[in-house]
Length: 309
Ligand SMILES: Nc1ncnc2c1ncn2[C@@H]1O[C@H](COP(=O)(O)OP(=O)(O)OP(=O)(O)O)[C@@H](O)[C@H]1O
Ligand SMILES: [Mg+2]
Image (cartoon, rainbow, N blue to C red; front, side):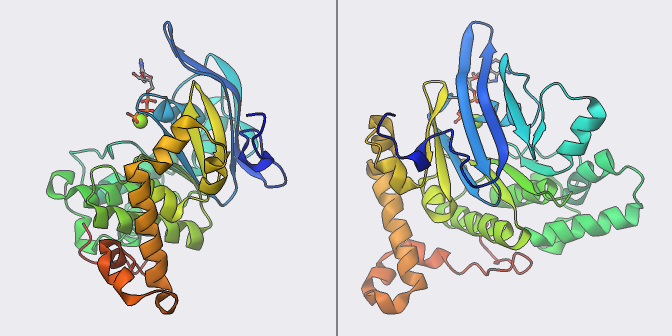
């Protein structure tokens, strides 16, 4: 990393305020060391994409940050507060300020969508009036692009994309400042995935969220991430914009972003940009790309698209 630009180094909190700081993180399961000397900063208001091969420890990193995985060594602060080894009441006060969408969605199958969204409300604000909790849940459901009649449905009655949105509604239940999303578009068709990306982006903008977004989806990285952190060799080997990462000349990064799927993602992004600025490009470029059909998401998350799931 000797030639790495300053902005692409892991320890680059710089002038921007870091909402999450990870220093010297080590995680191991028995003999198997997952992270060793991992550093990362997540800046306020950004969408940070987290990428890396399967099994490199992206989900374990997220679990460490949110206190579900106790590291062997290292320090983690969120909102300037250490999250490791805190008293339960202190930990609860910090946990209230973030929302999490776990890999696979993890809705409670015996609860309706509305009841699922109310789980964090009950956990953190047990004394709330049930009618108020139902009203808050209904608002979050609509905010994520589900129709109001999804509220009384059970997860088994939902499509994959609807389940993701229900999981997102639950993650938003406490009006978080920080959102953790683990593979939110996995298993969605490209149009559903693009719609979910735009939903994430518009929520980030309108609610001022910071988003820690684990993804394998190159389209997501190009479409909505401000910076991308790359996990490899038990560390975050680089953080930066995609252009900054490509300038590093690292074989894995090169292969990841410039391989066939990376090239397809660039083409998709170019077509999306073109469709947003139609006068600047040839009409047939837009018409040739199915991605052009995915840019109709309105900016207001309270007015979501219909029929994308
Ligand atoms: N509770 C656990 N006990 C033992 N090993 C674990 C546990 N959780 C994760 N691991 C191991 O830690 C490593 C990293 O897992 P993790 O789930 O973080 O990978 P990932 O980067 O999220 O992968 P994917 O992209 O497939 O989701 C894997 O080898 C996994 O088997
Ligand atoms: Mg994972």
